[in-house]
Amino acid sequence: MLNTGIVGLKNAAPFINAMSELSEFSFKGIYDPSLLIDKPRQATFRVFQSLGDLCCECDTVIFSIDDNLYHPLVCETIRHSLNVFVAGVHNYQTAELNELLTLRDEASSTLHIGHPFIGSGMFRTLQQICGRPLDVECHITKDANTNLVSLARTELSLILALMRTSVHRVAVNVYSSFSRVPDSIRVRLDFDNGAVGNISINRYGSTPSHTIKAINYNSIVEADMNGNQIMIINSDEPDSVEHLTIAPDVHSKLAMQLDTFRCCLMNGSEPHNSLENEIRAQLACQRINEKMRINFNVF
Image 1 (cartoon, helix red, strand yellow):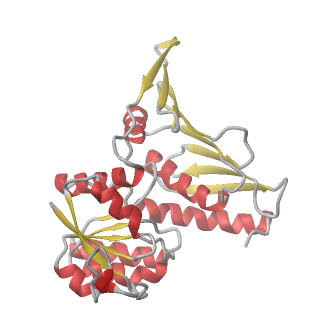
Image 2 (cartoon, one colour):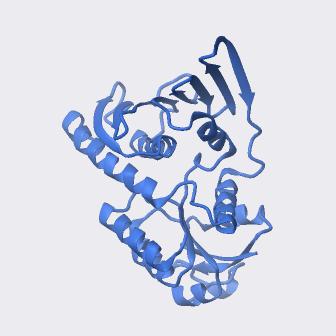
Image 3 (cartoon, rainbow, N blue to C red):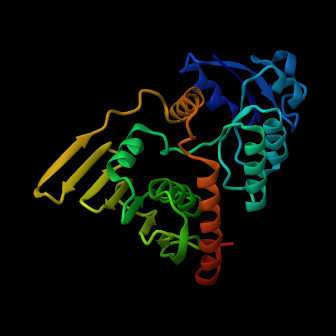
């Protein structure tokens, strides 16, 4: 049983619901540094008056908000030698991520970064089949309300977790057809091990889709991330196509992430989405942002 507390009221409800799906988590309460809980005595959960009070009663702490204003609190939690789950680090600076890395190693704590796909049964199967791909193509089509810049960062973390290496060179093209914000983003990635990757994202397709195609030494693998389908063509039998249907995760996406976090703690294994992976993604995103400012004024 993991005694777990949450820092941040704003996005706490989804995490409370996710923990209710998992019997291994015991929810202890919330600490909110912005004091948004006006009537703590009337709250349906325990309200801690300080981060230290929460840390004293918990084994793990969830930071429910992707905001670097919480960075000092994440650091303090790690100094208590607790294991930490952070909803996201898109808004963190590289120096802040490196500080978390140093503190994590000093405290021998586990720091897991949330991600909607990394850790899912579908993506784990894709990793096992692919190994270390030579070429990866990611194609995403979303609706018109999607923020493509944020989505590109999420997909970059995904492709880096699949490639397991750093980015050597980045090329970016940004297009807008209907609005003043990007409607289409194309990213070309050259990796340190010689492999290449392409990410194509647009927000005006007829049907939402998310596919990943990986070319390996002896096979081609194509995954439909939304449909939980994988197609495999092996070099020894190029005319024979193997189709796999991956069973959907039994829990919601957020509960699945927490469960993979728990499994890593129980097995002593590395998080599915590690801080190192997010640092690599952050460094690549800095290059993408620089090129986007040149090609398209989005900031």
